[in-house]
Image (cartoon, rainbow over all chains, first blue to last red; front, side, top):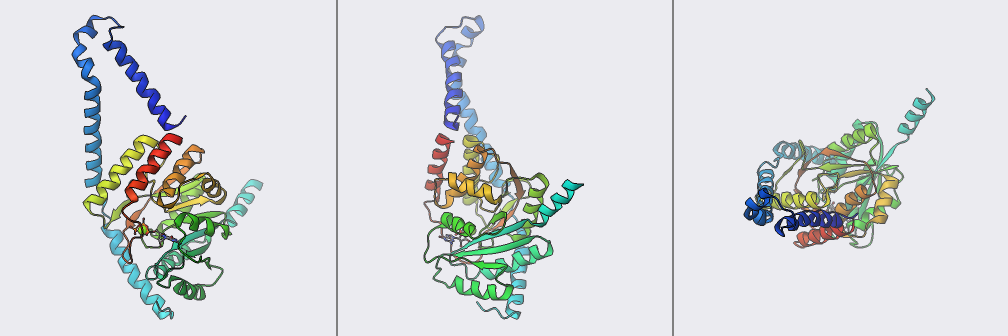
Length: 92
Length: 249
Ligand SMILES: Nc1nc2c(ncn2[C@@H]2O[C@H](COP(=O)(O)OP(=O)(O)OP(=O)(O)O)[C@@H](O)[C@H]2O)c(=O)[nH]1
Ligand SMILES: [Mg+2]
């Protein structure tokens, strides 16, 4: 199954449950009392997920490891390489 | 006892072919070769470096020839092509001439440090992985020389990709990897995209074909010398490839 089909099947399963609740196919006192929340719950879910995504991406951006030491090491090795290759007669 | 002897025999004959595609890397090529020699001669692995130059106008090939003279033509192989035919086909071209049973792919612009190659090899041996990928996004890995915008785009793209494709790897667009040769051949055969998204497709196909993937954190130091060859269409290409793979794998 492709990822697209996986997404479509999960989303439609969730929406089917939501529709049956909103359409009144399932009767329960609890559902009637919380109907307003059930109606807007998909929107709330999308907003919450968006916030989660933004937080995670920003957090990872700010904590993205800056390899200062690797850069310093590389610079030193470049100098060493140039000198050694020059001594061996390489010109470029 | 017999198996142990056989195992060590197989280990003995392991050979690593390092593919180095170059386009206008005159400044970088001698240094990357020097570093490869430095880190691989310290370990006892059998290896060769295959330089695939696409007719660079800056004379990269001429420097490559000097390096071949210096280090020997059994270690440095030159497989140049007439003109710039792109990165994807450069790997295919190089692989056709590889004599190793493992292939290592890396950039020649010094952003991929050869010090990680022995780590790739050790990890592969330990778990017999089909491929080992360098990762900038996990423990100890990282980047140098990226501004906030580039980090943000990179992290954002990575987040979306992980969400939609759930690959078994954290760095999809990186191109510092070790493959079993026959596995790489099969992956290349199953890939349709060209250009830089090719790297991403390769690792997604690997997941699809149930190949095992190991990861080594790498530090990625942005190129010091020379111009970036990949233009602003990167993001668009990436988005297209992402949607394509989302719908088909
Ligand atoms: N043979 C060959 N090599 C290429 C070609 N295009 C790029 N390369 C090489 O492929 C490697 C990766 O290219 P880069 O330009 O560094 O791409 P990048 O790493 O995504 O971009 P920057 O590092 O930001 O410039 C380098 O070693 C280039 O020299 C090509 O058409 N043919
Ligand atoms: Mg590069």
